[in-house]
Length: 412
Image (tube, rainbow, N blue to C red):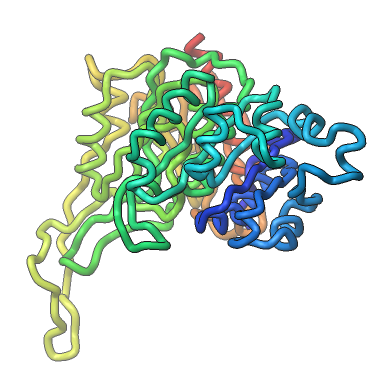
């Protein structure tokens, strides 16, 4: 099971759910927030109840759902004021055209709009409406007023509308996009890497044999992506060059997607110069000497007798030993199945790196099989010219945070 970083541990989110078809996305949004450690207190407009039920919202939030302004029990202690104050952030999702208009004009005729008028916490809204409604001059005037008032926006995105089939700008941002915006607004982490550009490579490369086959490895990109995210949280301008992966792009990171080793090399060189580079990608050492234009067929029930290979460019060594492009700090990764220290130390010298993060990816690595490529935990040895430092077994997010802290110490 993937371990989710507790980036919102102890944070209190007041989620106001507006009346639009996109309200169904809030069920996933609540789950995503809670798995990151946040508590979610839901408020639903009357119209929101036409799309999702208070029962399902409350079950996912593990809290009461507030719907009525004139509730005798709650209003005895001025409940709408309490709700507006007892939170770290108010999130409105979906923020309908009606809700935006109420916020912009200071109207307070239901619980949601009254809370927003009494808000003492930052407010983030995720608009969702028909493209014609979003582009209407009245909505755009309201948007300008709200931005001037300090309201933060996430989205809307372009795409097809669920209710009408029309396409345009108006789709509510996806739950993970909203989560990333919330994390950024509530992040109080010191930014020791502000102003520093750091290049990170991640994932595998796919080297084509023919139009349907390729040479690859088992890298998931989890460690490289976690490192990119950890560096971004410390304020770095992170340029992530990623091979083909099935995980989401890290928040706050500029991503370039590539497939082959040669594409990765070109993408890395394109984002240099940088203050540091961390090469966590599992780049294929070899590729087919000749890529077939058509799918290779069996001949008489047999495949090809041989597959000629040629060596791929060594990206880490090329940058680590480069006279002009080399960043101040270069860190490489060494995934080994045997002789970890010996092979990692040799790689440190050969590649021109300052550090090598060596990890045992053999099935019998001693951490329940999770140390193999694609797992969620790692036990690494940090190699440098000064020797070897063994780190205890930990999750890949923890490895990333510890490595980001090391980078910050060095670049400071």
